[in-house]
Length: 513
Image 1 (cartoon, rainbow, N blue to C red):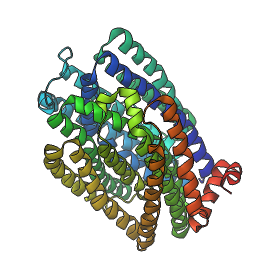
Image 2 (image 1 turned 135 degrees about the vertical axis):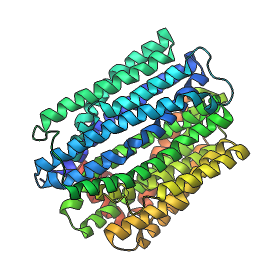
Image 3 (image 1 turned 90 degrees about the vertical axis):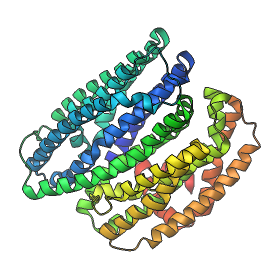
Image 4 (image 1 turned 135 degrees about the horizontal axis):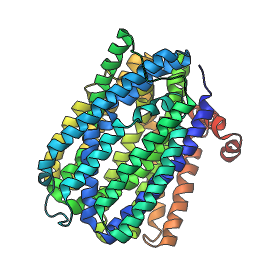
């Protein structure tokens, strides 16, 4: 079975964007209300527990990506029996994971106080609150979440996005009412559990109705079973390493700097995460299309597409980084006030971390779609260990800056070159020299454009809504105009236009010509 990758991509992005807008706007409102009506320590403990559960969650341990990668080929060949068997295996895995997460989380509960430096709100039961977070994570595995793999493999995540957006909209309204009238963080967290259960049940019903040919039954053959578990083992290490590196940053800040600093750090990370969510939606939407392309197209064709996607991704990520650099501080002051603002050098470090994190995503997308996880399975562990060691020393020496610097070092010097080498060696079967050359050239251009844009924005008064809007207009026009001037005559620009024209139609051609 070959499906229309461009149309599915457009549909996934549109509904994904709507869901992400709901997922960003309403939590933004509730986050603001928690600060205003409850205080920053409540927000800090909320961020701390979310990070701890991300460590336990371990980004699905990589099972979802592994199973979906093995579904691409049988779906293309209309092998419904094999897809059903893979789905059954996926369900068994998720049940084991859900129970394991619940047990491990309960065992961690006696040590919660050791993870908080200083005071915490004395009118809440920190153990019961943590249990609700734990229950939410465990329920995401135990209640039909595996059915989303079918939608993902068929590049129909737009269906899941519709459900998620509708449920989150309803629950968010309830949460706003809870914070404003009841002012109880425990009831607020409980609504997240309800949201998870509702979303999984509805998505399961839709998957059954849309793709009735797949039944959760059967056994995969021994060869496939062995390959799945080999890849899952490698992916588990990948996800453990990357998740620990990210989530332990918040834990270290809580242990050494306190819940108020966690809340401040969380505010900046929230904005970065909001942007990352939209970008990740694009990566996720093209993964199934890339997987289908890998199954039916030649390596040369996929390599040419890879170069186009890398150019577009670098442009997009670079522009977002420039916007963060110029708009972060005035936005934080308008949102949370001067007291909860970091120094500018911390912002520069956070923006650099954002750029390095997302510049890697095209390589990671192709690795996931091709199912290449075993060749660099120890990469995240090495990066994680270096990150943790640096965290322990640097957070004591220089504070929150040390946490960000540790992540930058592990990503740029360990993980980025390692994963790039593996993709080019294992799949493209060539050296990565052109990729590094392009990355260096494009990054140099982005830094130059960032400097020009920042100098212009520095001439605008820092605070006030109208001045902020003016800065936004500058960030919208100046970087993209300079990018077009710099890259308009390059081959990468021309090739990238072909992709954008297929997605957005001829209107784009009039804008950039």
